[in-house]
Image (cartoon, rainbow, N blue to C red):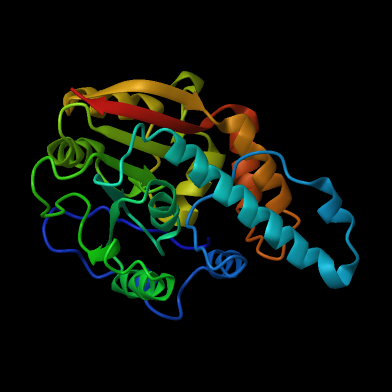
Length: 284
């Protein structure tokens, strides 16, 4: 998790080169955690962790912590999928900024429907499509080297679209306009993201450090709702996940995959200048 993940701020059209995701430059945390259950996430976790993992003997402690972090990340993906609504096997879903496909595979297993993922990283797309082949769902879960700002898919093609910690790399109005185009009336968009808290005032040094670390531009909470309204997406549910997100960072600070950014997240959350937000919005 040391590298900027998924989409970057690029104009619509052909995906730009993504050197951060080239083979050999992957965040070791994402790979190590994914090896736990052969399910590779590129996001953080939710919920309380089992404190007994910190009392494990040295020879098993690190692996137990990694296992627990992976469990929390999978719980985060489940929370997102819970908000997609009534999805049927004949529906089609889009994972925008799909990384190595963890949430896409979870969605297919849960709903039995077709899932497409898009990423700027050809390496991640190749990795995910190989995973589809190994899992026996190559015809149902497919990954594409495309820009989520301009996917090229037909209007109203998807029953639901989601982004999972990807929106900080793109301009929101352009992104949500594309999602609005891809959804039919009543279609659902779900976003999980870290965002700056407008009510806190000026952006804190801790939030600025997160921006610098991931080479991204964290948007404010208000930016999301303005861009959603401008794109015909009406929030149906908004959940502040911050209290559920903090334990993940507390545990990761003790883990073999800690990178030093853990302190910035914990400080930003404690100060109130940063929030972990889930938004479910419907196309109107």
